[in-house]
Each structure stands twice: as structure tokens, then as C-alpha cells.
Image (spheres, rainbow, N blue to C red):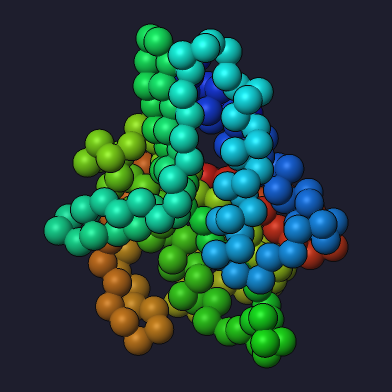
Length: 214
């Protein structure tokens, strides 16, 4: 479980982690079918909403879940996948959740491709989460990522330029500037914190990881 400082923060962070684990187990067993990020967001938000009564300890506790909340970051409007807000008599807290899903095959059954863009986008989501916290839109950011392509988790080689955005198991991101172009498009952003990828296999080929801002 995530270690948090305040009671409300701890309750909310633990809820995010617990529901992510439940979500992963259900997806891995085939109980929840996921083929793109939109269905991932809806199914996960539903689980989180069902969990709220278990972290409600006071009649005045209030929790809410918002999808696709628009906020301004560095002069550009961004949509946060999920905002989880909590309020109790002595505190309030909010978490931005960004979600990423990569499936080897699209819903059409055809190979999806563009793994390099997915890898870069995982890093960029972390950048956005840091910026959400920086601008005080939220108090914490959490990235929830799933994929079904084992070579992203346990690669045999890391020679391609896309491995600048290394998301393999136990890869560590340190504070850095990232400007390696991907998909023919320029890239320029930085991360201020460190992150470690610890993927969990659920089912035969579904991998899940949770990454949080400090």
C-alpha cells in the first residue's frame, strides 16, 4: 500500500491502490474486458465508487469522482482522466489519476503498433501529473498503466531510441529532460521526481503498474 501522511490521504491512496489491484485481477481473469483507455477509465471509476463507503468514517465525510476534468497547464488545457476528491471535518485531499492502456490488437482485431508512442506517453503522463500538483489543481498524482505486450515489460534488447522512455520491469526514472523525438514529432518535457516500474502479471498476459508522485 502507498504510505501517506494524513488519515484522509491514506484512506484515499489505499483506495486507489486496492481498486487497481482488484481491477487488475478481474481484467486478468477475463471478468472485465478492456480494449481501450475509455473502457479502462469507466470500469476502474466504477470500482472506486463502490469502494467509497468503506473509507467513509464520519457522517460529514464527502468523496467524489470526476472523469475528464479540464485544467490549464502551462497555457494549455488538459483533461485529467479521473479526479478523486475527498473532504472530512479536518482535511481535504485530491488525487489526479492518469490511465494508459496498450493492447497488442485493436478492437478491430488488427495489430495496433505504435508501442514507441505508448512508452513516451507513459512518461508524459507522469510529467502532466507533476504539473497538476505544481499548479495545485490536485494534491497527488497517480499513473495507472496496463499492457498485454510482454516485450515492453521484459525486453530482450533496448537498442531502439524509444527505450529512452524505458518502462520495463524495475526500470528507474530519475529527474531528467526528455527530448528524443517519437513518431516523427518533437518531444520536450522534464520530470522532477524519481519513479520505479514494478509490473504485476495478472492472468496469462496482462501487466499492470502503479506510479505515484511524491
